[in-house]
Image (cartoon, rainbow, N blue to C red; front, side, top):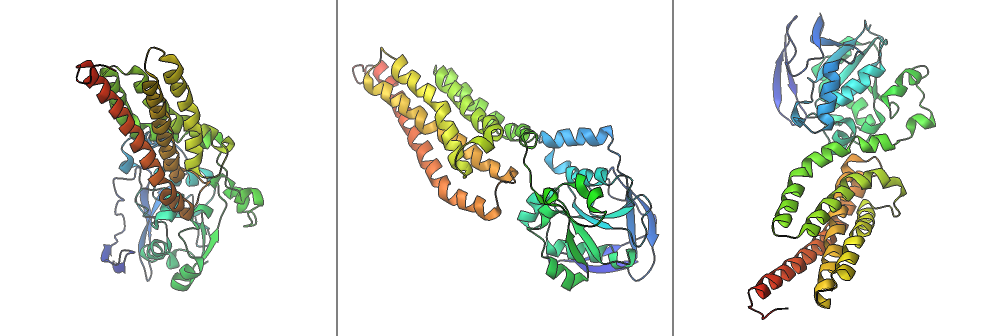
Amino acid sequence: MNKVLTNPAGKTTKEIVNAGSCCSSSSSRSKPIFTLSGQAQTVIKSTSGEITFTNRLDHLMARLGVKREHHIIEPGLYAMGKPTKDSPVFVSANYTLSFDALRSSLKGIDCYILVLDTKGINVWCAAGKGTFGTDELVYRIEAVGLNDVVNHRTLIVPQLGATGVDAREVRARSGFKVEFGPVRAADLPEYLKNHHATEEMRCVQFTLYDRIVLIPVEMKNLLIPVLIASVILALVGNYTAAAAIIIAAFTGLVLFPILLPWIPTTDFSTKGFLIGGLTALPFALDSFYGMTDEKLWLRCGWALTYMLVMPPISAFLALNFTGSSTFTSVTGVKREIFTYMPKITWMFGIGIGIGIGIFLIIILSSMKIFGGI
């Protein structure tokens, strides 16, 4: 049967739905199981609450940032167990970690999962970007013919998707009521008993474990640039500066997420400046008090370079972490970017300028151009 639909991007598409057609090869978790007949014929794919070794390996690769664009499943409607027309409908993103967290929490529950096309992004981030949003949800409801699949008109949407979903507009355009479920998928079985979320279920937690599992992918993205910079500095003989670059990156990528709740101030950037300043201080003190054979201006120059370069690196990495944290909001992130990025840039640029200037003076002096320093 042919259906002509308009997707959220405004493009008209034609879907040809046949009984027994197979789902995309991008999803190893599902296969079509039956076709519903009626006004809007659709294919429902099957899934289960079992997490296999392959799934866990996929999760590990996603955490490490390996083949980031491959951790997706096919958008559409999925059935768990033996759902009926009265079974609940849950909404998820087509990011494997989001989908797997939901289905594993619903093990033993007969239900449907409506998967939106979030471009392989998790629910919370996709809601901020708009891909887990009103238009995509309304489009997907029509695309799968959900009106003919269930008798009720209720969708259980993750609370972290509330940023992108306008419940009133969804109901006006599709007839489905949006019911925001708990923050954690693990709370869904308890939530389904009376469809009431307790205060604890509504509380967004960002535990030490939640923060630590984000470190590998952040390190993977910056490992090569940091190593290149440190190797260059080591090759020119400045081993202390090479170590400083590594320590500054380690501070922003590892120490910051671990110590996040206990670092004073509320803005991530100022937290990064603070912890970066503390790790830069030993390098500055070593330059000032350890280089006793050098001129006072040279000792001050190197000390100032470390204090100007290292904190901005940690602050920038801390600011970047706002995209992974539930401590911030979209407006808060934008405010921080416009407030602190100019300061980070200027401070880092001045520090690098001083460092390059000192290095050039030392080189020229060794060539007797300035007659020595």
